[in-house]
Length: 576
Ligand code: TEU
Ligand code: CA
Picture (cartoon, rainbow, N blue to C red):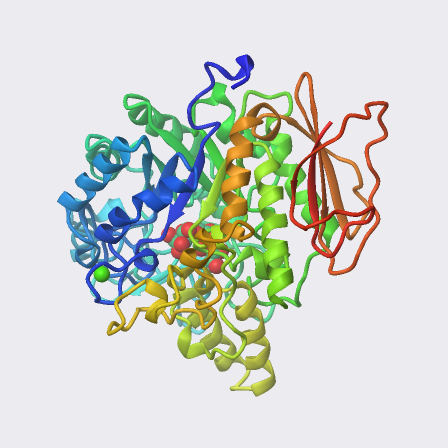
């Protein structure tokens, strides 16, 4: 490690591997991944050269939104295992020098959480004010209407009428995910104790913080501007993201976290200015260690509805701008940033940004994307299956194979609004096949045996394994030096070796207008890293750096024998 890096926080130079418990490894043949399955895979995880695992929600939950609807923070969803299993996992990670972070989901709970059960029991319940309740409005004809026109992230009104107490409650996500009232200090304290300290005391090293900018809503609950005149609900991100008290809440939360020296990575959607992001991640602000910005993963999504879009919906210049906005966070500031192209809410990066058209291009573009991720500054995140180049579910799969509430809501909405128009339904499927959250939730492909080795052969996995698992799986790739998996291991090692350039270096784009090739440099005090990536399926020229320096060393390449021009999806990393 370069002397300049000594004394940096451990999480800056870390590679974090994200695990989706339901889809990682099923140890008992019930078709659902589980904690013992993760335990049995720890040696595989360490073999990747990663430092931390992030576990998506494993709390007790009715699983309407795959555990992002928490019914009890202090318990584990029974099919995943027990509190003891979690204690063993924390222990076994630490024994191997791995850290472990959990998902902190505290914008909302499940409607099955005892707090909400009490809150909805009567208007005079001591917990009534723990959630966001509002009276109905009435239109000119005396018809009952929700308090405002906000649209839920998953479509439809963000308000649900409660028959018993005759008020609406707010749910920014699904109906079964009521929003917690952060204005109430007693509620906040309960959240810190139950959701955070309970696990910090068990030794977890930090949290990925779900929807971190939504706790403070604009207090007047005004109608959102009408952007979608055909609909009675409107996108209202500007009214429920980055509200007036959000930074006060995060400071308070940080007081708890800092007692444990815990790291945090906040999920920060709908925040597009540098100043806006810095409020969350500047070290002086003492809020969060880092955040996920959405610029890159949102590429190609529709504005009114994520899936209402024409594919691919982005150009390479858009991608460059997105990368630049996350890299610029650390330029001359005391802030920190992240690098990721996948998570459990996204389609697979090879299918979105590379090519899954032929096996050759799939492998090559997966490696090219690995080169990009590995050479960008910030804490690095790899999502399970990304390291073997898993791709989206096949086009032939029908809506019945999709299990995500967001996908199903969108399909049903389309079917209702268009009166089952086959052309519109086909369009919806095309978009879902590209962008649905389901793609990242297909079972992890471990080997060529039945069920991709995710579950025993007699089991019925909760989601159908991809048909391509005989060709794309861990076992095959472990034996193959030229596999995507071997390439990721190589890049992870290079990233450690050249951390001052790859993790901490200063980013600069060289060919902003070029719509086929992305070249950029990363600089440290002494060296320059030069990266050239061909995002097109044709050979392309590229300009080397205009430098007197003639000492070019090829650190990484994804083809056999690099020529003058870049081949389709070829990438190169040089040390200058
Ligand atoms: O996601 C919040 C979010 O704003 C989006 O990623 C959203 O899920 C997506 O655009 C919908 O298509 C977080 C979690 O990552 C997600 O899995 C949960 O469903 C959501 O919060 C609610 O907890
Ligand atoms: Ca299981």
